[in-house]
Image (tube, rainbow, N blue to C red; front, side, top):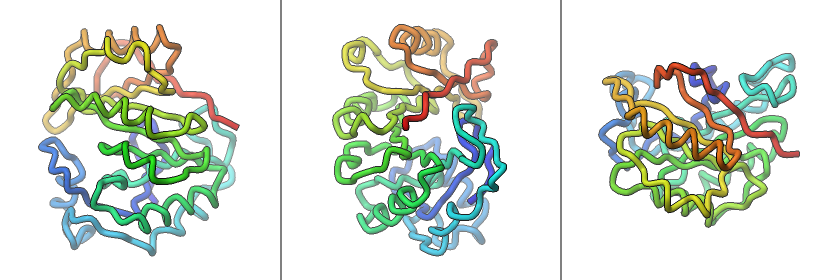
Length: 234
């Protein structure tokens, strides 16, 4: 488990690595190619059971999270940042082993992010699991927002990450069914491809109208710093 510069989490934890989506903008695949000694299987889906114990003892008791709503000693843990834990190719046993760790560590928040949110329905999550999906605007992938809402329980915080936000999403379809708790927006990096400003303004306005916290990543280079957090549920 590693400390991270990603603004919306404190640690990344990768008990599973690899992905078969083959997205052209994928940073994870680039990292795996750059560090073959750390990824001997490349970006093929791989289970690392020896990493399952990391959240139990990696966070100091005096740790202060980037999320001001968390108490001392609690952390935001981006779970499987180097893959897609809910890809159709991932065995259920791998996923269940990861969720069990979240159950055993209720003091932490475990953040999941997938391009296949319909698979969330197959599992039961403790309330300290935040369930997210990625929307880029390409290939009409905004349907994932509906899949996220329809296949998760509202006891869990639901969030949508528009990163990289590459094509405008028509938000009119979601105005009457936007049961999400957090929106993140970020740009493509290496090479840097920021979303058009009007797309970002549309999301900011939608979030304000629906009282949804919104988090603009620094890589947007947005003139105003907007980095809001949802309330942690008891």
